[in-house]
Amino acid sequence: MKIVLAYSGGLDTSIILKWLQEEYNAEVICYASDVGQQEELDGLEEKALKHGASKCYVDDVRAEFAKDFVFPMIRANAVYESGYLLGTSIARPLIAKRLVEIAHKHGATHIAHGATGKGNDQVRFELTAYALDPSIEVIAPWRFWKFKSRTELMEYAESRGISIPVSVKKPYSMDRNLLHISYEGGILEDPWRAPDKEMFMLSVDPEDAPDTPEEIVIGFESGNAISLNGEVLCPLDIMLKLNVIAGRHGIGRIDIVENRYVGMKSRGVYETPAGTVLYKAREAVEQLAMDREVLHLRDSLAPKYAELVYNGYWFAPERLMLQAAIDEATSDVTGDARLKLYKGNITVVGRRSPMSLYDEDVATFETDTVYDQKDAHGFIRLNSLRLRMRANRKG
Image 1: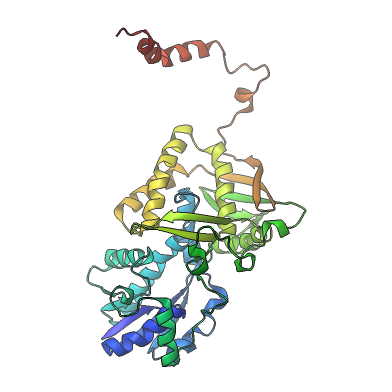
Image 2 (image 1 turned 90 degrees about the vertical axis):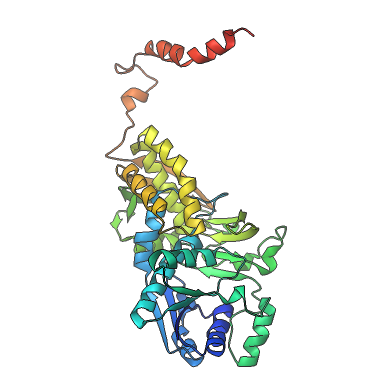
C-alpha cells in the first residue's frame, strides 16, 4: 500500500508519518508544496526520510500559486466575512492538486493529510481531491485515531524520538505562504486576549513603522498587477516585493472571529501585506475603468466567490463559471494606482487608466456643454413615480 502524505514537518504531520507506517504497514511518500513558507521547508526532506518516508518531494509552486490561484481570486475582489483575504484557503486546492498528481505518478491509491476534524482544511483538501480523481482514497487520521489533543501528540512524538517545532514559547498554530501568515489556536483561542507583539513575522507593528510615508505605483492590465514602480514583474515577484514594502509599514494585519464551514466560530489573526495592497490598488483602477452595472454585479457575486474559496470549491463548476464572468468584468481594468503607505494604512492618492470612463467635462462643477441639467427633472420624476403613487394611494 502506498500513501502520499501532505507533509509540513510540523507536529501533526510528523506524527502522522510515523503513525501511517505503524497503522497501515504502508510505504509513505511525503509531499510539501513550497507556496512561500521559506525557512519552514529547511531540512524537510531529510527529516521525512529520517522518520521513514520512502521519498519526499519539496515542490516550488510559488509562481503557479501567484499566477493561477492568488491573482484570479484578487480579480474577483473575494473577501470572506470581516476582511479575511483567504490566504490559507486559496493554497489548499493547489496543494491537494499536487498530492493527487504525485499519487498518480507513483501508483498510490491513497492520500493523507493532517487537518483536524474541526477545521476547514479537511474539506478543502478532500473536495479538491475528489473533484480531480473520484477514485482516490483519503486518510484523515484526526477523525479516527486515539489522540484527542496536541498534548497527547507531543507525548507520542517524544516516545518515538520525533523532533517537533511546537514549544511553550510558541503556543499557537501557524500557516505561512506567499499571500499571508495565519495564527490560530493555543493562547489565541481566548478572543479577549490581544496577540503578542512578537508573534508577527511579515509586518512591523504599525506604531513602530517609519514616520515617513512611502508612495508606490502599481500597474494593472485586465485586472492583474503587472508592474511595481514602473518595473514590469511577474505575479510572484510583485508579491515578494510588496510583502517587503508593505510589511515595513505595518500593512495587512487583521484579527477576526470567522464562521468555519463545519459550523463553529474560530478566531484567526492574519498578516497579508502584499494582498492587502493589491486589493486596494486594483479597486482604485476599476473605479475608473469598470462600468457601473458591471461593477455592481461583480460586487454582488464576490461574496459567493469568496465563500466557494473558503469552503474548498475551487475546482467546482460554479467557481469556474463565476471566474469566467469575473474575468470578463475585469477585462477593461487597465491602468495605474498610486498609493501612500503609512503606519498600517493605505491611502489612494492617484489613479489613471487608458480605459477610463471618467470624463472631467461631464463630471465638472464648472460650465460644460455636455450635460444638460434640465434633463435631471424628467429623470427624477420618472424614478419617483412609484413612490408618489404609493404615497397617494387610498386605504
